[in-house]
Amino acid sequence: MLSLRSLTFNVFLYVFTALCSIIAVLTTILMPRRLPAFARWWSHAWLKVYETVCGVSCEVKGREHLPEGGCVIAMKHQSTWDTFAMFALFREPVFVFKSELTWIPFFGWALLRLGCIPVRRGTGKAALESMIQGTAAACARGKQVVIFPEGTRGVVGQPAAYKSGVSHMYQAIGGTVVPVALNSGLLWPRRGFLRPPGIITLEILPPIPPGLDRKDMQQRLVDDIEGASQRLGGGDDRYASQVL
Image (tube, rainbow, N blue to C red; front, side, top):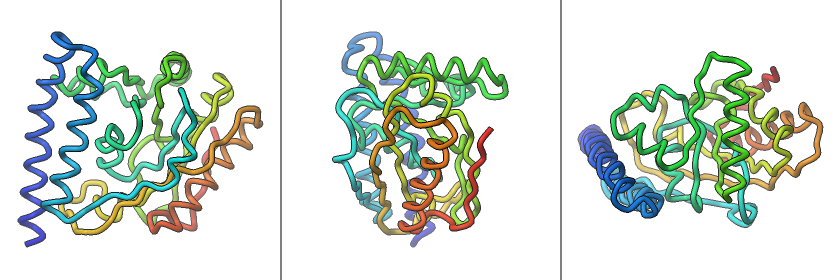
């Protein structure tokens, strides 16, 4: 039954997302101001189907730690769930993503229309500057900019390697960074097919205020996220910070 439920949900998710991506592009042409609301609806809809078909619900802790207005949300990254769920879980998020996703017809175009920030990986300083500029502009518009400081999805139980982009961003824009821990990889692992039942917990942690030394901020970010993820069952006590 688990295999059948997983297959049913996986097929639904990608077909539903493809159809909604087409509708999203049409929405940007006909009713552009409605696009964020449509993204929230899509995210709530597939989460509801996920719960109904696979028996997986989600729990969000620490919403009181989210500041008013624009901020940077530095989130643990273990699963596709993390990116697809954020439109339902946060006020009006945009996220930093690899520019290759813009090549996906409709889906990639919709991300750009939502104001998400593409970054061309492997271009070094140019990629960092592009990310900083895009984030500063989005925060000025009151957006919650979600960034995955590990750079890619990790595997539960393996040491985490954090990139330094978020600390450079923190130093450059002088804004608040909110760490977020989660355990989505326990139920929706990277490259995993099965979707076992359970509860995915996302915990919003106390913000890191402006003004810290960049490396001190980086270490605090890693300690906060990994410590909380370990407590939620989705981290590893052998984690190591990679400061570049």
